[in-house]
Length: 281
Image (cartoon, rainbow, N blue to C red; front, side, top):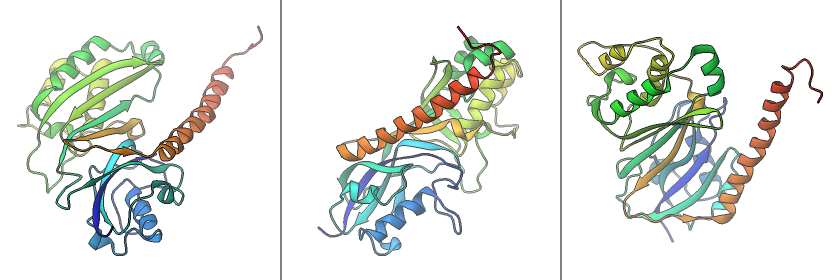
């Protein structure tokens, strides 16, 4: 097999050392890490000839479970051969052979993001009396077609800021607020800016009327987005694409997640215990 294009599904953790997903000169990124391994393992020789393309770019500290990229490679992919050279926080776990004209970015039909608010819900309730009902009302209003100019980072090359939001769902799981967003495409920082304003609304920092004013682009608002560490690119959907999951690679991914869950779960419980003067029963 020579010069066939593949669509790969990957996970990565947005650690501090990575300056986002997109390639940047003189900075380590997720793309740069993957390209380096593809070259060292003989899958590509020249990056410019590989048509390497990420489906979605993510900022620093943002993680992914189902990010995707396309690449023209020069031999049949063996995922564990690639993964063995990648750090544990990055891994490819599924793939599909696609036509040469296929685009990971433009042929995507749905992107699914999850945002986990990094403060326990019980703490938010105790300290700010957070109003879930008004937040759910805001999430429902975000659905459908809107101009999200005031919910995104301004970019000179982006002229159209209208997007169709398929769904925005808010839930509480294991004492954490979970937001789920589904849309064909998103603007830069769109989700984190939405999170910021919905949380402000829930905490009573802004009125619902103030939230609605953000949909009126006659006046432009500027503010800092929510913490990127809670954002996960959960999945990307394509029509008529059947991924082949590599069992060993998926096990590698899940084992890595489990080890981190155990490690940080212990730390979480340790600091919770240290807040009590008397821990005896």
